[in-house]
Image (cartoon, rainbow, N blue to C red; front, side, top):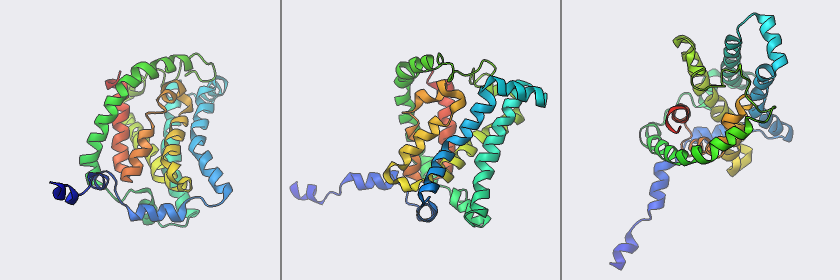
Amino acid sequence: METSRANEKPSSPRLRRFLVREDPIYDQYASIYQAKSTSAKIVYLVLYMLPGLLIYIFVNVDLVFRSEVALTHLSPKNLQYAWVLIITFGWHMFGPLLVLRYADKLSLRESFAFLGLNRVDWRGLCLVLPGFCVIFALLSIPYMRFIWTPLQSWLQTVPLLRIPAYSIFQDVPNNIYSFPPIALVFLFIGNFLGEELYFRGYLMKKSAFLGRWNWIVNSLLFALYHLWQIPQTWPVLVMVLAFGLLMWLRKDLYVMVLFHLFVNMWLAYGAS
């Protein structure tokens, strides 16, 4: 009996091999192209928050937003939709490609490889992600009831943090998902692919200088970046750690896109 126990292999390395995906291409790009100088490190940390700050100024600041409506003659709803597309497509998706091409001097193929667009983690998609989603869902139910709800109510009372009454994020998902189907397609692509491309595919490699703290900082700054809907997103700060953790485990963009989709749908329809 003692001999058989001694010959047994520990289960933790086997579990680690199942959960953690090795990706030398990911590691190589993160090692070579992470921010090196102090100024570059500051710039990339600021880039986590900057697009959210822009949306906050141009959408949540009432005087600025009303001036835009008067200038563009767009309805408040359509103007906000335009801003979402500008940030999610222009900033989140095309921005990294332009920087990688002209600042980092990567070819288009290399840029796609950097962002993880040319690799798919099938084990992660088919085996790891479903279990991860189940655990997330189970943990989120008490969290949403006992922590998110009171925090959300309190943040909504702070004038600078309050979501404006005209905001399309005021009554999620009813306002957001009231757009025509074709508009929703672009909204979904920008939200799920755009944000994951920017935060996990691009910035998480650029901030690899943070070492073991990288996935934590990436998650927290991703949550804080949603300045235009603070009462809804800041209370889930702890739960958003799951994003960085899953990317650290699997290093796959498409796993993250599907997880992002699941989280949004679950928090909108399931956990409540």
